[in-house]
Length: 483
Ligand SMILES: Cc1ncc(COP(=O)(O)O)c(C=O)c1O
Image 1: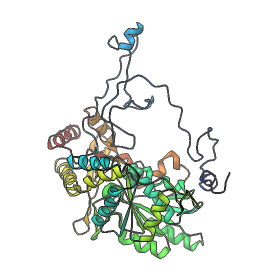
Image 2: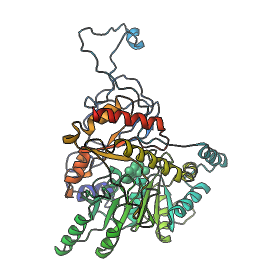
Image 3: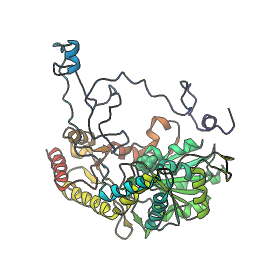
Image 4: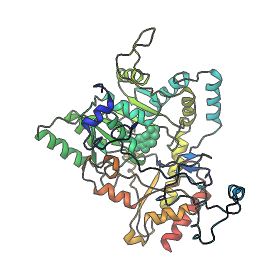
């Protein structure tokens, strides 16, 4: 194995990762999933969602449903089944009746909300023949995002994950380094730490009146402890602006500076949020946005890296285009990536960005309506919002917790009740320290985010949600909780 082989790095450096024998063709560090059962015939569900939430997958054939999947569609052969009649197969009269099947999802958690402006820009990019991971729309999208958030520079990338990967690399994270990381997040925050062969140390959420973000007291205690013990310092910390609410940067910025720790802001969910007069994405050394299909604005897939430093931005562009050295032929001295955003998708993003304020207003309206209608129900508590003095969040997803001891039902019953009516709600992120992938990673605290996961639910929050749909969702939740 070459010493720069990242798979070799993973095996050496990440505790518990890569110790089990891997099937041929699999990267070490990724434990194999149980073998998928054979695909069962079942109706394709238009508008269904990916496991990571909220992206519609129109008319695609389903991944094989696992027996554990409570939403797995049952498709017993019936006389109406054309395949069954073709083979002469008839239903087995002794078989138990099939469980009732959920209807297709009508109301998605956070679907894309695009219009004619996006279509025009997309066609402009198409007609210009800049069908490449560079072009005038990429340059313009970078400028517009940087201007929008008041940042020096923005680099358009293929995904938020790619932006996090580059941010960690630019922060100097190397194999064997330790990186502090919020536990309460989507896995894309933490995965790039493994891509670089570094070790994540997860930090619990705090149960504060202002946010569910990482607990800065735990960070401070750990940095002090590591310094006293003479341990090699942490290289970086990845804070997450969970569901659009900024983390406590008033404390995190000076703390990280004092300990020489690079601060990376995962603002994937927080475009348009403001904290203390500054925009999400501009805190710390490097900021990251996602334009995944479920985000407040989307390019279908895409991301942006934000920095004040022109040299860092130039290096990000270099690394994101295969680290190609200046030469007429293809010359490479460093490991690079193919991480740039397509000009077509940048065009789409520009159209979306122009409507960001409308989208924030609509999502805030969703949350206000939910609060008004559901705020007094027994056992229901909404996720905290920043105070007006502090700034504003973009209300990306409206989340609440349901205390089963008070509500006499729990978040899973509410979710299933809505799902049975074609309404998609989702549990809040399952913390990283509870994920099998990170089973052996260190965690500071852990109980707060575990409880948020047990009780937390995200309600449909898209900017295209109608008042009738909001009313229907509220009526269903009220009915169940008052019932
Ligand atoms: C907190 C967080 N970080 C990172 C990402 C990754 O972004 P992307 O899907 O664009 O790679 C997402 C969303 O997908 C996210 O919610």
